[in-house]
Length: 323
Image 1 (cartoon, rainbow, N blue to C red):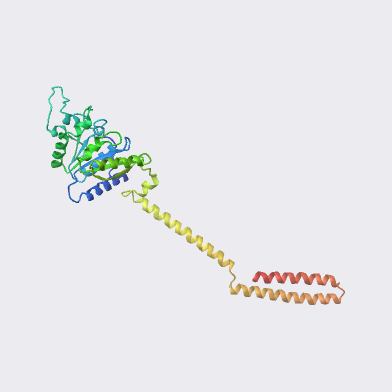
Image 2 (tube, one colour):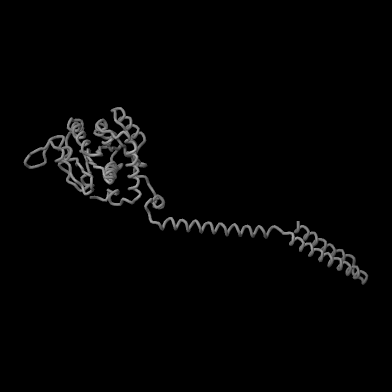
């Protein structure tokens, strides 16, 4: 079993949670209890169709439902490698009647082509040998009978189809299953191709449940924030960071308030400044008296006027500071 089965290998990961959300959405759409066969297709290869099919099947099996996954991509099937089962006999051998055994015996019983997996409640039918006419095999009555029999035994039947843009295999299956899901890839799938596939499915009478957007780039930080079952240390760290931010903000506000208070003069400080100016005025008056006395003693008039001018300029500057 490969590590691609993230829902089984790491059930508490964010990706597993997304698959559980997809499973829940499908269950809510099944209000009439008639949605039992689901086809998973894509526009082009490499968009994650088989990966979504296998993990979605595991997600349904974890709820206790009996699930079977059919690898209907008989051209390039890979579900056998994901679950670690035998690649043959498979779907192509059942539909064509071509045996893979040396004795040449064939079987018409589909149970001979069903393989058990290591995951409880989940079985797999591999793609089998590559046939020359996959489309003709899928449109045969054997395929219709196979789906009808599987619906009687299993709760959910998931079919991993082919990319719809290249071949018509999945378009044929859309008429045989209850619903279809189209897998797309972020920054890879073209909108025109997706519109064309949706139109083709609707033209043949198929029913589309929705679109899965795969390969969305997500940073490690966003993964940690979206981790529903993550460690409890993360919220505490976030709380500490928020508390530290609040403390820093409060300190900054108090400092700003203190600086603002320092800039705004209070009544007491104004009165002190007025008293200082009065003292300076008294000093100036006494200085004038001394100057007058100095004049009587022979101080020159020009020097006296220059001293008075300097004193008046100093008083004016002090008054402007108070304003």
